[in-house]
Image 1: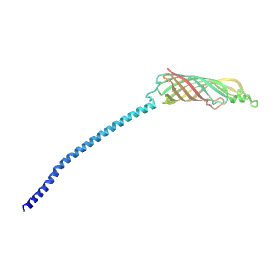
Image 2 (image 1 turned 135 degrees about the horizontal axis):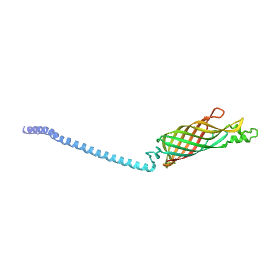
Image 3 (image 1 turned 180 degrees about the horizontal axis):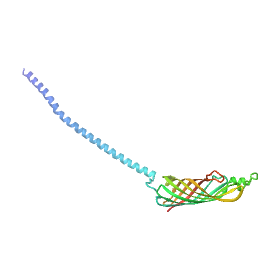
Image 4 (image 1 turned 45 degrees about the vertical axis):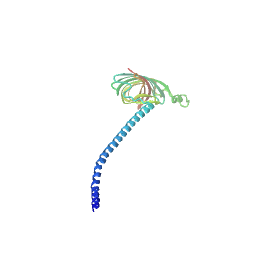
Length: 259
């Protein structure tokens, strides 16, 4: 009887004691869990920070590497400022669209730049003349025998004033080594053509002065602050001898000097 009572008391003590021990151990485990999470977060943060620095270092190295390989120069401003400056150009031209005479005008142009985009320019050209291949053929063929009097009008010289607008400024890479600056301009002008006319009934040359208009399309290629090359296409309009409109087209190459 005493043994049974003792065993019962021992079992009861174990039942009440075990939950208490479990409950006492739980807070320790709960306290350890946040500590473990904090350590993991700290390790992750360190890892992320290290990766970010590595990526930045890699990007910097790649930028330096490709920068050296490409060696591309970026121009932030115009190479030449034209505002308020005078431009003088000597030009050699050709007028190829006359059937009987080939013209090679020698000209001089002077312009003033009101701004980087707008300028006014006066020009003069004296037209050297040479019979075209067609004229030579027709004169030498005995069956045709072209008469000089049948060429009714020749251009002697011309001058005009034009307003130029340069809306495009840019740069191109020449052979991948050097940047060349250029601008594109267009313009309208008015002037005078001096011609010599011959009537079939009156072989004596007669000088005439004719008002004319013209359009301009050109490119200016900057060499340095003072010198530039110019390539122009200019189309002129004036009254043709005997009726109609004469439309000489001039292609020119010029060397310009900015003062």
